[in-house]
Length: 232
Image 1 (tube, rainbow, N blue to C red):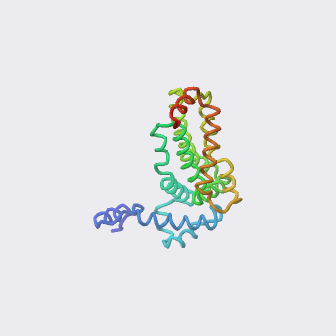
Image 2: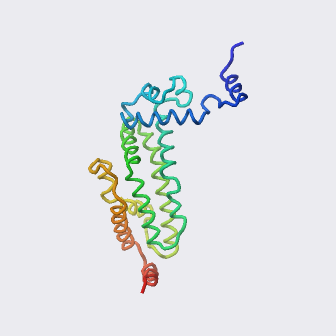
Image 3: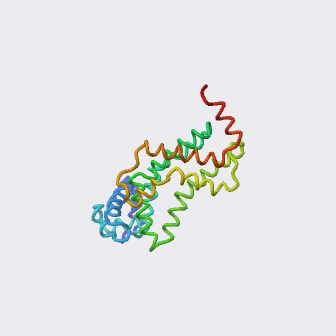
């Protein structure tokens, strides 16, 4: 009797072993190997053979987990995003002092976006997007776009509270993030600077950006509240 894949998977489960394609340790091993290859060669030059060798698995094993290089790359990006950006937007869930909240979030955002790991990932995605535009589109929708929507929700709440007056919240959310990254992101992405900006640099840029943002969109109510909260 010939043993089918389903029979083999069932046998593995009965023996307490993960079924084919279900072993989280093996999957992590493959992704880690892929990470090293993509960083070293970039998406275009990397091959599944390279990843197989680097991960220390057979070609048959790697295709059980991932159908192709594109699928593996997306899995890697999703894992990186989940690790790096986890809980980042929780800052916006606790609305207290508007200026302090914007500064705190802006500093976290700027530090994450300009970190070496994120810069490298973005370069790789940009390189891959030229040949596979849908990959770049999915990257944007699942990452930057989701974050942008969360910033919009926060700004809309500030508008409802009468602290901000914004006609185009969608545009204002983009403006805010750009102000928090002013100069820093481009210097990093183009390797003008080889090290991530220091916390002091980030704070200087973010505080200045928040000042500009609130001068443009802050209301008299916000100004009055901030004047009252200032120490005598």
